[in-house]
Length: 450
Image (cartoon, rainbow, N blue to C red):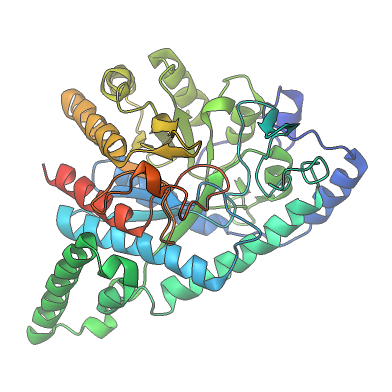
């Protein structure tokens, strides 16, 4: 794995400029919480992170596809088993569509069990007549529009840890305990998806899978003894934004002696925090998890190559994922030079498309939203750029929910501007609902086949 620089330690990021960090009012209280977290069990294990690196290595080699999906920001208030199950259900449905329709394995990574912090473009926001500190996710403060609620509270770090632990326990039970069994593909169809065009299209795929399983059984293959048919590998990820939290959960693996951020299997650096000499890149340079970096429309080939050398100097396939987020109008022209530079330098990068963040706008009624057609257009541009450079379009990174929300415009059921306010529930960015998510999976599968 990646060898940590000789001067690196889990706290060496503190010697660098750390952007997007909360302004904690009580450093002593923060230090006490972080010290307590440093004694707690890891949320994930080094061996699991290594397994994900191996699977992402197949993506880097053009032999698999990465589906990374989940909430824009998890909530302390909307936490429960049903919400976790429904989110997982949509991701499993999407993975089945992608795998069955494209013929390549799908690596499944959730934005879940840790996606509690959000970067903000401004330290303050205006709500009505009030100018308040920005909401930075439930890891830091509360969304209630009062001065008191917006004060960063370090006890929230502990709450995030415990909620992540509970979520991981349930995810492991679902994915290894029979819920993810391919014989159950029909039962994953939520009621509001089953009543839609996308749901009926999904049911046809499920019927074909059932026929394939019956054929295997008729040929004498005992499908009950094939673990890959009954359980799935499902990994967790989040943006590692608040570095004190990440440091407190970083552990040295007893088998290899390497350092891992045990808050998630995979962590990524956002577009606002990828400064080469900044604290986030310094922290990421020493952990051995598979890691990602968001690249927006201002990213240059020189920056991409410098990040490759800093974060994956040993050129390990699956170690580094570049997540483009450029907007539908800029993706093809903006991405192609990055692809060419990284390809020519021989870096084994996973390329992934985030078609959400570059296509956000404010509707006439004041709701932040995204148009489904713009999301699909950015993914199509992502595939076109890879086709022009002869590289592998390795995955998609989307914000979605298992709830029947009306936050993104369009899709087969055609959510209109006038529909946004009816079920707009996100704390931060607009998410795809189940219908739109399945629709997107079919569109991506068609691009993969092409």
